[in-house]
Length: 73
Length: 490
Image: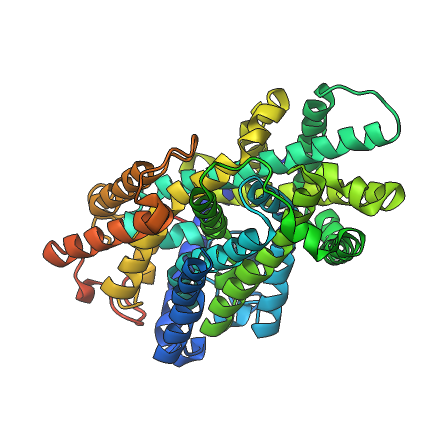
């Protein structure tokens, strides 16, 4: 998170209207570009999270802790 | 960064895109993400071992002994992390969006601002508590040197802490990077050393036999309060989960490290604070460091933790400042305005530090009230209703025809279920007084407050599915035709 610290400093005034217009225009175009990229990426490129993963997580991190907590009570 | 060398863009445009990728809301492309499996584990570990662990362990010592407390910390944290991780992590990872943007899918463009308020309460509450811990640390350092100082020093310390946070967060990444590079590993060493000294000086038998500090008469009630605190502690990671997952490259990296490091490892670190509090008989971490470590070592630990507190607070303020960018009125304001707005709610901690600090465990439980219904609804929405598929473009579109605009920007079924979850929570447990319904002893409050609204929301959506206003064919998929954003909100 700390790598993402903004660098603007105190005293920086409100950006001029022309800069805001450029910002909006640039970001809107960039968003469109990214939507297109996301649509064309194969789902598996984001890594798989299978039914086995769901089962492991549900059992190990939810059901088992509940059982242990009840057992210890 | 993949976007840095885009042809046809000016240097200003490149800079705008870069800033919004790093510090803003642009969906992160896979090649822009920082964390593989190792990186995700390391980052989550660094988050897990932080000064808030000392607070949570101390709260637990009020109600439970070492063994019960350890069990509650580990099991409750895992349950909380499971609930808070699965949907936001898988959604954030797949679509590269941050936490508040993701909630628009279930709560609507404007409805998500309710979540923004919850998030800010969470961040700023923790910041205030940690700053009081900083003030307490300053006071105890002065006392250790023989100065007879009153409690006003704590408030003054909070004020100094607020100024230091402002200084750090507005001066940019460099200072905080330097401090964090040393503080994270330093805290690990500190915790291990404290644990060794604790075992060496007092022995496990004495730790295990130590009675809780301020328990209720009913052991069962104490145990369930401990479970509730731990689950709520896990749920209060909600905002952080979204940030971390968005930066991971694979789905598994977005889930397992979060649950294991933020749930299991953090619980172990909290347990060191629990054991220390039980043995020294105080839940305030700044009071047990000198008795356990001796004068020199304890003092060094106090100074170190005081510095770490400022770093932790600065990170929370940074996150809050970023979150404020979701508000249109603040979107174009300079960064220092956002930081200032984030710090203003911490001012009450200057004037009533002790009173607010003593309500810390209530605040922790209150996180359960806030986030249990949220995670339940998001889980039902993302996993069961949407089958893990989102409309990315609609997240960034404020046009009334957009899929997530719903009714004037609000998705009332989700918001009503959110309120229902809070009613369920309060019916089972009052987080301020800990007055509880009998069912709380069997169910906790967070679990029903997550499950009940999730079921109602699911049924509501099955019976009355939201009207999808804009037709799919109106927005060409993957083509170079008309833009998909009618009214962009970035």
